[in-house]
Amino acid sequence: MSFFNQLKNKAEEFLPFGQNRGQQGSGSSPHQNYPGRSYQHPPPGQWQQPPPGQWQQPPPGQWYQPPPGQWHQPSPGQWYPPPQGQWQQPPPGQWQQPPPEQWQQTRPPPPPPPYGSYPNDAPPPVPTGSRPGETPPGAHGPGVYWRPNFSAGIPVGEEFEQKQGHGDPWGWGNNELQNYTAEPSNSFYTPDGKLVLRAVSRPAHPDPEARWTSARLVSRRTLARPDGCLTAWLTLPCAEGIWPAFWMLPREPFVWPHEGEVDIAETWNGDCQNHSCLHWGFFTPEDAPKHLVRQTHIPDMAHRPVRFDFAWRCGGTGIREGDDKSAGGGRLMWYVDGRPVMRNIMPPGTRPIEDWCILLNVAMGGNVCQGREPREGAYDLVVHGLQLAEAPEGGWGRFENDWHHCVDGAVM
Image (cartoon, rainbow, N blue to C red; front, side):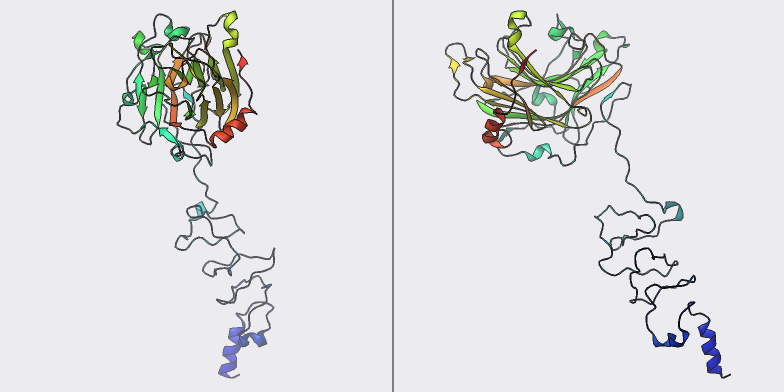
């Protein structure tokens, strides 16, 4: 046998099983259903996608990129090695062979635990999450005429009066436990631009003044418009003995309850029920019709920013001459997450809406909480955004439409 034939026979020993050896030297591509147990990858540039169900993973070092159109580009920063049989080409420059112990699909870190109330000694972290797709508070710009500065390092007292004390002799009118302070431990701005009102419960503290401390803030400015909309994005603490509130009163001095009270967001004892309220009378049988409310169940109000709006349209309703009292007839509307939940007419004899202020506070215990005391811990009311605008979102046309589809407040 010639030396040439010896070399030829030796080479044929390496050809795949079942291949027509006599044609191997032609350079033709292997059949699409590439057979045989001793799998070899076809030459570069000649790879073809096998029919469904016949794919085999090539040995290390023999991998070739599939033809265009056979894979989808993942979003930047979101690529992870897929399960076996579902390979996708990673973005250019980002492929690395993972070690064997990491060949299972990687997942992003789990979200932080749900935020609410933390009955323990350590102060809780300030929540930063928001509902997916929710517009950031700062994006609502058209017509906004006031948005307080929540920058860290600025004293809270520049934008708000920080009420102090127990509200003696009746615990702020409801036998409440808390001692309001102006301390940074009870109200402060965060580095990412949020306002936090922190109620701290330490029932065993030797100093009675330090057992229950909290914050009560009153805006230094008034609504200052006969028509407008007040909006806040709040994460509310929900726990037994805790009563956070976002509400309004006439500018001091005022006569309660005749000049009115508006409650936009308040909940107590951890029931996750928001109460939209209007008050302008005493809690007596004859004044019962002067206390109106609608409840809205918000099960996740302690875990995300909830949007609360209060819109008023009182222009041209008039003021009683000589005593600065509203002649009534203006229209008020309460919203939760953009949905109208209650409407009412501005009661006659109340203070004109332009002269009202904004309040934020976290109360503890007392009559409203049915005498229940909060467990030891810190409880945060987080204000993600706060603003006054000349009209509600969607304009006054939307307000008129909502007015005809909203319910009146119900007598408490």
